[in-house]
Length: 525
Image (cartoon, rainbow, N blue to C red; front, side):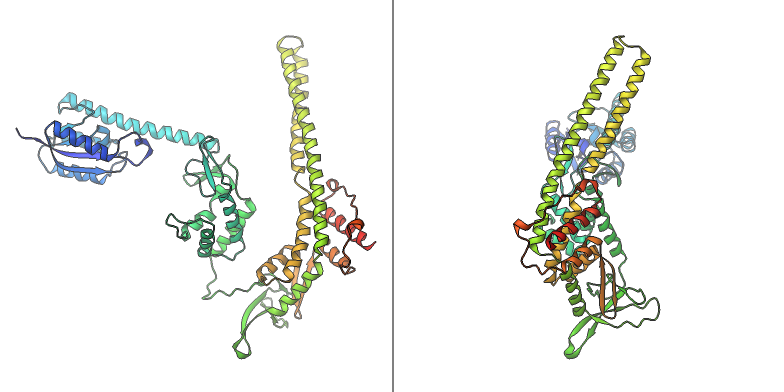
């Protein structure tokens, strides 16, 4: 007796809907064993890992092409849904059965004969497979929509976050999130391109699986990932997320601005790293100050700064970078305060910080108690109305009054939380800026000096080879009064001034001015 000849077909989708289907290796073992028991001859085996939801499978098309060029062969598969989950491929198989190109279909888990009843059952099996795929797709999309409404992340957490299986959301990784913040801060400075940024990330452990630095595209994806702002993504569209952001919007936008600047680079063959360009304007014609290299005696090269003269004729001359740096450091010495003074100022701000937090916590506690009392009154009022103890008119009037009170308390709560923003921070930041001036006096990092003057200085000009920079009122005041002291002896502990400010009642600028004035007045006395 001749064996029936069959093509063996095994398929395993790489998508989630086939998680419960056995592997291709397991299917091949079972089908070969089934062919041996049923005395079936296998002409050729076809196997592929691809979804059958849509037409276009390469191996399936190759198998059907051979079947259509032969007379009377069979197909051996694990189940009809391995052959087709769409109407086109299913119809192709049924038509091949109708035209006797396929004389037999064998499945270890499904019975079929090439009869009208068998064809009907095969159509039902293909229809069920298609229905399963369509229904599963709708269920998955519905689940995605629900997760988006809850602000949850849908897939594997991006670098800097970790998946939390309990909340089914993501949360910042303790270490990796700090690396992301540091990377954004570094790129914001403008000192990095994609390659140097990849090296920076590699130094902090962010590499490819093989341990090599990331490619330019990977670095770009990290620097443009809005997930770090607390947004979730679906099909290239962002939605509000319910997880904690890693970055501030100001830092993220600053990096995007840098990326945009680098996407349209200047058409220069060589990049000259001039640290003080973009800082000064010409004091004569108000044009920007540019820079260039000049070769002096013995072939030594120097950097010079000059007016661009884009606004017309200008008589200003060149200024060598060393002379410019010397003047800037002299300005730094004028505003720098002794470490003994800044350390004492910082300790005082820490005391105020603790007092403010205690005061804010007490205020929030009182408001929360009032909210609970209002809620209790509302509950009691509803009970009285339902029990018929008060008429409807009185109930509505009193309820509206309590609701107004509840809204008012909610507004007070929001206001208290906003006021709780640490007013001490601007003062602390100013003191640290004055402390940093001392460090920069002996620094050779010209870019850091430039960024410092950009932060604290205004109206920076160059005229007649002289630097002119203005400071904000507290710094200017400290600079003027500081000249009266020689820092010897430093302020002794017993002579340290007592400050009696009420910072919560004044603006940040008033706090800076009052603190600075009080400090220097006490030093003078």
